[in-house]
Image (cartoon, rainbow, N blue to C red; front, top):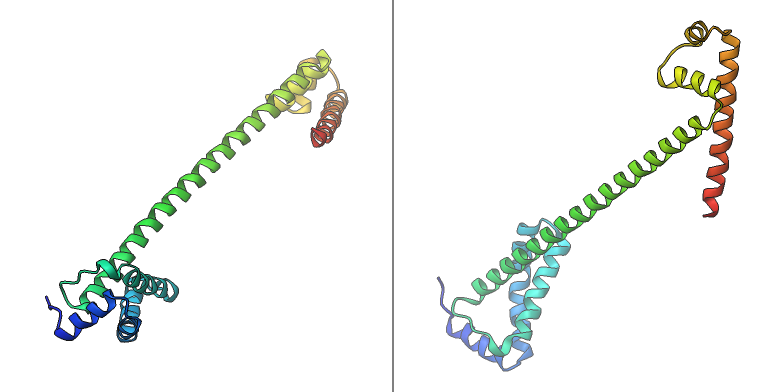
Length: 188
């Protein structure tokens, strides 16, 4: 590990005393090197610029208590690495939080959709139960049990046209009621 040279020690002493020229010398000497190092870590020009700028901002803001035991270059490289690690961990936590929120919203949406479907099914069942007995029986045989018009006609000893007529009226009734409910739901 490199120790501070007398020139570096003098530069740090000037920096600690608030000498802007010493700060500018450090900035000009190390900015490009630190930027390239940061870019090798982030693979992103803008993040790299932010990291290096933060290193120099921190260097200036903490100049009074600055204690460098290694070379300035090593100290600055370590500062870049530390800021990168901190940013990486913060970003990782934010992504994890965003993924958690996304999952919760998705689950809530699924539950709401399930509730909505359940409500629709209940509504349909109630409407079917409110049908006249013969229409209800024919509708259930066709739509729930999957029997054809011909099979229903044979079982109930009625014509296929009668079966078709009942199914048609029930579907029309359900469509009209559903349309009214949808129109009403726009107002509430």
